[in-house]
Image 1 (cartoon, rainbow, N blue to C red):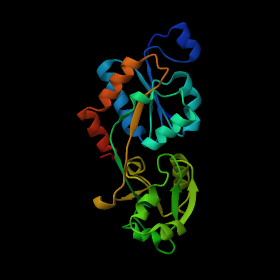
Image 2 (spheres, rainbow, N blue to C red):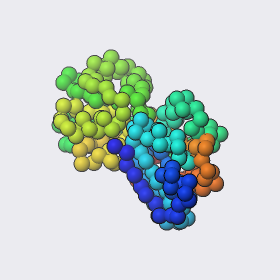
Image 3 (cartoon, rainbow, N blue to C red):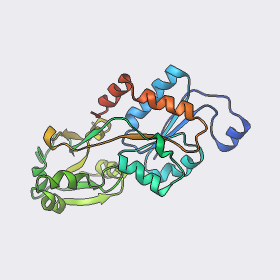
Length: 248
C-alpha cells in the first residue's frame, strides 16, 4: 500500500482542484525502499522553503497512473529500476535531468536472534536454509551478482524457497510466518524492519552497491522547485539522513 507524506496546505486553482493536484505542491513518486529518507527530507525541505511536498511510495503499479497525471519527480531504487520505468512509460521522465543521490549496499536480512547462525554468503548454501528472493524492484540479479563472485550460485539458487516481484510482498510474507530464514536485499531495509530482522553485513570487499537516482517528470509544471528539491537532497544534511537510513 502506498505511503504518503503531506506538506503544508495551499490554495488550489480550479484546474488543480479538478485534477486533484494542489497548487505549488511537489508530487514525488517511487518505490518503497528509499521512502524513509525521502519522507524525512521532504518534511525538512518544506520547513526550509515553504514548498509543500507529497511523497507516494510503493510498488510502481500502485502509483504509475497517478504519476502520469501529476508527477514532478520520480526516483528509483536503482538505476536499472528507473530506466525500466522510462522504457515502459517513455513520456514520464525527462532523461536529461537524472541525478544520482547515494549508493546503498546489499546485505543479508535474517530472523531476530539469527537462529540459523547465518554469518556469510557461504552460510546461505547450507542444508535447511530457506531464502526469500525479490526478483525485481531494484534487486533483480542482486543475489546472483554477489554469489557469482564466490562460486556460490548453485548453492544459493538451490536454497531459494520463493521469489516474489517486489519488497512489499517480501515484507508481507516475512511478517506473516517464519518460513524463510534469510533475504538478500539492501542493508537499508533493516532500518525499516528492525523489529523483525537482524542484519548480516558483508565484508567491504564482498559488498555490492547500487545507486539511488531521481529525475524530473517531463510534464512537471514545477521544474524550478523540482530542481531545488534535488539540490537539497544532495546537501551534506541530506546525505547524513540517507546514511542514517542505511545508505553509504
